[in-house]
Length: 287
Image (tube, rainbow, N blue to C red; front, side, top):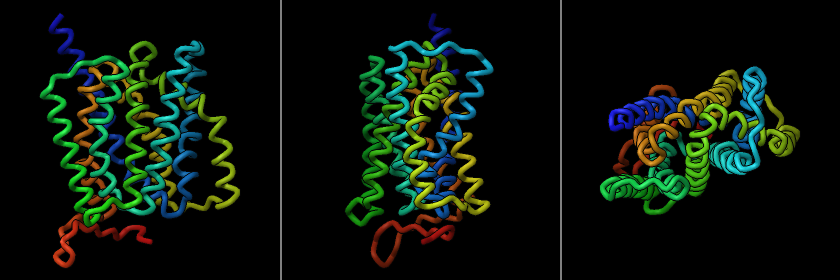
């Protein structure tokens, strides 16, 4: 029994890491795309693209429709990871670099563990909670330091994105234990698609859609990977390894995102000798 539990934990950590690795490119890709794509189109339109793939997968596999109880859980998943997180993170990326967003999102593992505790009645050790809180405090202090002692309005959007993501992760990880992670995200996308048509359609009518080739690349990534394929691995990892424990792999995400931001966007994070704040240099897409 103990060996089986350890095997499941290792499997959960492996798939959880694959999900985190894929998600770590989300903010850089969003930062690239939002330079020429409206935030509403980018944040919510990517789910419409992913919903097309989800519909194809469900059609090919001929999976039965979820029951009423599962639909209620899928609604929370959709609100969290299809509506809330994509919209607020895309909005924030108009105003702050991906590297800054990565640091603020470092609070996400703690919030996900809290929602996982409430949803799945998991009981991590006191040391686990102490470590999570300590890590989150470091993130908050860094964000305040970067903002000169105050939060940027984009930080509020990122905090909202954190809450929505944590709800969607915890509910999806719990539901994945009976449906499978890939079914959870597929059904959530399909349920959300009709509602998404209205705000995305209005935004297209108002702002148009003429992305640059690089913005197309960013939009394609967040649509196919961030909004679809990464959730296959992430929800499976949460389901078999435990929401609270596997969610802590997200502590790696800020470092991975910072690395990708420097590598792909040439963003730099440095201590400013003039004002004493942590300042960001953003050569790409600066407005």
